[in-house]
Structures are given as structure tokens and as C-alpha cells.
Length: 257
Image (spheres, rainbow, N blue to C red):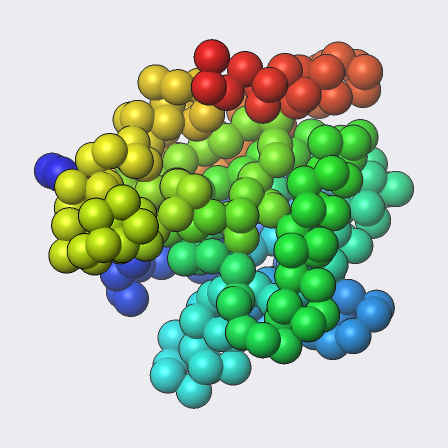
């Protein structure tokens, strides 16, 4: 399967996203709303629930199912309010010593003029800065398309689990092809160059665990994902806070070496 085939699979409208897996894995989930500054962004869903009886904070990008819902949620592209809501929930998790689980599935941050006027770039940058200092374990799960800084703003983590048909990249293949070759039709070539597949990213120590989907149902995949999350969080909780933060810093400093 080519890299662009995986991009197509990651973008599929029928692909289960974070809210589905939260429903399968997390018990008694309660969603929280609002960034306490401007509004509630429907593209980001976050709240608190129980993973094997342990309280955790879960944050996911949500694109909706019907056309009307997808329009209301900007097709899963978060606005500044979404990133600020996510950071508010992470700070709350830190206060109450809850691990954080982030689910990634979005082509990128919303690029409308209103989002730019309200500080989209600053909101993303603030998340990057603050997440390096969150004093509880953070696990990110890349489920579908992880695009640009919009995905990275929920991906500063201690451990990244990546579905084998998901992708994670600084730019879309179409955008890359348009910049490099002035021809978006060369997106399949760009996808190969970008090295955006789970196997590529695992080889570069960006992804830590690959979840192989195979021909299993989404419910079967959810069972394995729950086991992976339990294992990763358990491993991270054994680290002292200084060691946890130092390891997180080292994980990102070595990218590119």
C-alpha cells in the first residue's frame, strides 16, 4: 500500500474517530465545554471519564457525522477556542493528577479569517509551550489524518500510539506538491517524500507504538487500544515528575537527528 493510499484511508468519511473510541474505552465520560474566554469550539471535544476505573482526561478532534454537524464543527478543524479549551482541560488534569489522552484526527487548524483574528497561531504556540510542562502523563493517539500544527498542538506527549492506516505530517501532500512542484496532482509523490506513515514515523522515533488495524472491526481495535493505553499510562506513572518532563523534552529534541 502506498503512502497516498494511507492518506486516503486516513481521510475516509466512514473512519471511526476519537469520539467513537472514547465511547468504547472510557466509562462514565462527561464532556466539558468552553474555553472561558470566547466560545465553545465544536471541533474539540474534551472531558473526564474512567479508564479501568482510573480518572483520565480525554480530548479529541471531532468532525461530526452529518453534513450539518460537520459544518458546525468546521469539519474537525479546531479554532483558537478549541485549543484553549484543550489546554484548560489539560491544566485541570494536572491539578487533579489525571493522565491526559489526546485523539488526533484532523487535516489541520481552521484557517478562517475569524480564527486568525482571534489568535490561531498564538493558541497553537501556547499549547506547544504549556504541554511540555504539564506534570502528568500525556498519551496521544493518531487515529486518522494528523495535519500540520493543528495536530501538533495536541501531540506534545510522552507516548504516541499511531494506527497503521493513519498519517501525521507537517503539511498535506497536496499542499506540499503545490509548493514544491506547483502541481497538486503530484500529491502521491509528495506523500512518499513526506514520510508520513506510521511505519516511517516509528522508524524516526516520533511514533512509539503502532496499532495494526488489519481487517478487524472498530470494536475489536478498541479493545487493543484500551490495552495499549493502560500499558503506556501505567509505564509513565512509574516515572517521577522530573523524569517524566525530562523524557518528554528529550523525545522532541532528538527528532531530526
